[in-house]
Image (cartoon, rainbow over all chains, first blue to last red):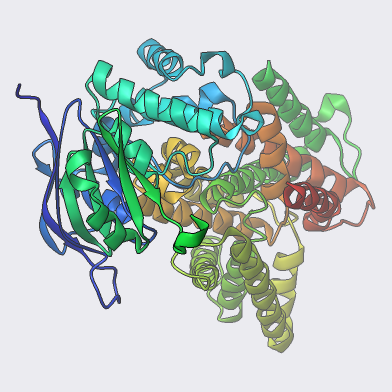
Length: 267
Length: 313
């Protein structure tokens, strides 16, 4: 099977201006259509920097970052938005908006400067709303949504871009279990059914291990391991990265990490 | 329907501005009256264009700096433009065509200063700090303006004061022409940036990932808004709050898609300032109120209300 190579990072490094050390050092990643990869690591390990480098927001210090074969830095924002949908960690809502209107923003990279919204744009919005199971919310104001609903609406907006790469940066950070599971199931489904390449940044090691094809474990900007979850999530690697004693238990052929109590007499 | 209503309001405002005034002009004489032709008509048109420019600049700035309380006055643009123009008058560089350029330089300088101060918190612009910086820079520019005026010779002083507080009383067909030359380009720039402004309301990084070229849009909108403010200030002095009240009213009616909002803010701003100027001319006739006082009387309570709603959220 030879699926299209969507995102190709080879030995990329980046250092924030004025910083003493690389925020990202010699990291590689190859994402093909239909792949679901997770990027794991503690706070400040370089996960979000990886997204910025992959999408050409910041220039590379070393290495190669290519999106669909073209260097990431050579995409204009508008071109990029047609092939990559990003659900960023944070966003504001300065003005009140309805769900359908906010999803329509995903069509903007496809509209011409003076052109109006076309029927195919409205169709893409409706498809995205349905795919993310938020069609019934289309006329709601976004501030009335729950956290889980709002995240799904943001995924719908990214889908309305009709991208080939979907990047989700900690999309479940403040969600309860049901909404978190729904979002992971949605992302997995998009990779399987629509052939999207999905790159998920997350703290949730166990969920990533159950849903992702491959995981990249980052620590202080360096790749500790990259590969199928069963190979990457070893006790040694996890303890080194998270600086806490853990045990790894298999569940349905996927490794699951359980942090240990430090004092054995309480365990 | 909304456009029809707004258009009707604009027509009524313009009609009132032409019919009403300290001197009674009979209905039948409106068409041939010299007062109407060389005083009221250019003044009504000028008020409409100036108000429109301020309204549209305010609507664009609110999205750009991501603060619903932004307007050219509160961001210090008007104060900077006023200082630039008074400096030009003091240096005898006056004249209807130079004044807008001097005001433009002043507005850009004020914008740069406000922006610098707004960045104190780090790399990301803090919309709240930006407004504080704008008010501070505006006050500073106002103080320097007053200092220059008080140090100027009697003749210059009279000119500068007339211009600063005179509102639209100096309106002439020449002034209309000046505005017609300086205003269309920045209006076009803002309209072309309308969709990017929709995206910018989400924040800079989300906007970028939805295809907005954030740096370019920001530069263009700042320069365009400064130019609009400068043209407005050059022909009418410092008029506050039009750029604040009007976009809010229009957002309530049109929503937040700037492709519709920006033109609506133009027509709405024109309507408001035309009405305000009519009040300024008629209220204490035969004397005149500066139009900026009328807009401030309406604007300050609205600002207080918005401030409360915004901070309550």
